[in-house]
Length: 562
RNA sequence: GUCCCAGUAGCUCAGCUGGAUAGAGCAACAGCCUUCUAAGCUGUGGGUCGCAGGUUCGAAUCCUGCCUGGGACGCCA
Image (tube, rainbow, N blue to C red; front, top):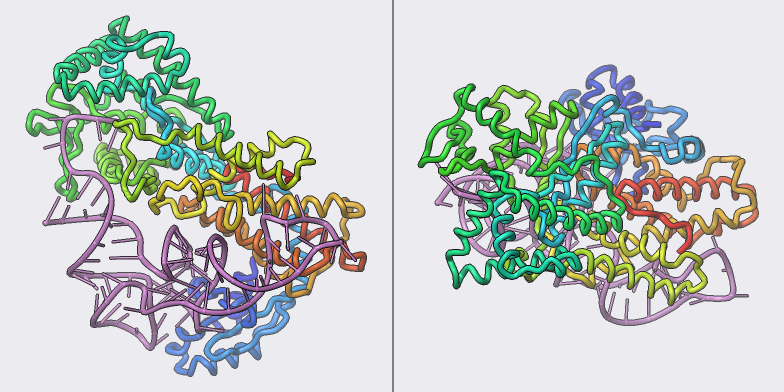
């Protein structure tokens, strides 16, 4: 079904080996304008080799190249353009998709391989911010896409459940906290305490010492501190679980920072044994001047470890535990340097598998062009945003289709879908200006647009005479053709999105397919009772299969009725 | 100061590993529901692709410099 490859082969034989297949394949492109056909081969590179004008080469090739899957080849200036045989190609494509169903587009590149994906990783006792949403949504989509490529994906939520902020929190709790309030609304109350601490510390600097003291107590196993920490952690996890439930995301591991506390000593010892540690201003570091990077800090002056130490321990532990072939870290772009350092240190330790570690950075969510500040408590709560989206979706359903049976359920799919899609439709590196109105928009290039298209298509299938036993024939009209071609692109889209670790590739794809289908829907009466009806229905069915699967990869549900 | 990311229509963004005439959505305006879900479709207007060089048969795309915005740069994560 790979016509690009076949087209290249035809050219290859006709060229009598003047160019290798490896040289021809990347040259083949899709013409920008459909009047130019489906495949194009520019002859510029050949012109030099053959000492002939590109136009002439194209002309000569057009007379020679032919194959059953090609309707014709035409020389258009320096290009050799190939037109696919719509009858044969469309029949094959639709038969294939309807046979494979949701497995269409699955790849085997990752078969027998494992990938760990570190994502979401919220901080305990702090609200789930919009920034964490990005990591969560991108990571989940990439995990799904990895699985589609054949990998076994391990979803790891590397919780921020350790660190000096707990000293601050315990201090604040003992001064101003109440058990009752925390139980009532854990995250809000804990976050309130955290914010209060930062407010008060300006007037009472000794609070910092108090916080340090309590963190020290925590580290050395003080029972009181430990009990509080455990409690805060549990309450926070309960809150996060609500959000993951709404987003329909599950993890294989919640081993966060605290989990590695007892595993860092070994790492430090190993670094010492391998003679990688050096002293600098009282701290212990791995020097990276050869790599033109600032040194990687391993231990503070006071002997405490740092996040680099923790991440080293985590990487080594994960390699041992999961035997991964690849490992992704879905973490904001501001931590680029940290991951560069981390991977280099692992290399220096002799771990060649460090080459398979990949930081997948993403842009900020900005408020008025600036990074949102969490310390001052000015944060938009994700849970509120999701609830608002669901609520709005519900109102829309009430207005447009009040007879719908399971309105609450569908509203949830639509509202959550809107938020996920809004995040995934653009390249992850772009910064996003926080804009609630835009997130909750339900027209144009949105998740709903895709869901709506899917529901429309499903509606047609419900009305079709008999959905089963479709006698699929080829479709040759110009309205179905772009859909067929886009449907055929799906496997390539999966591959590309995985290689680039870019879920937006899939999001853009489902938008494009939806757009083409909606045009078709407008022009063609699908249920018209004529000889091609079953073929058209096969096309509609193919579209629903691919849209549903594409949305699933992004983490979005595709209701059959809207 | 050094390094990283970005700069394309009024706004938000596409543009595949260089290829033919620069593409969507939103916003504006004009149309399309007795007929498969109008949360849709069709049409119109709107561009010195940040600036200046360079490489090439060919540059929005690659290289260099500059400008603008954001970020990172040792004891937070």
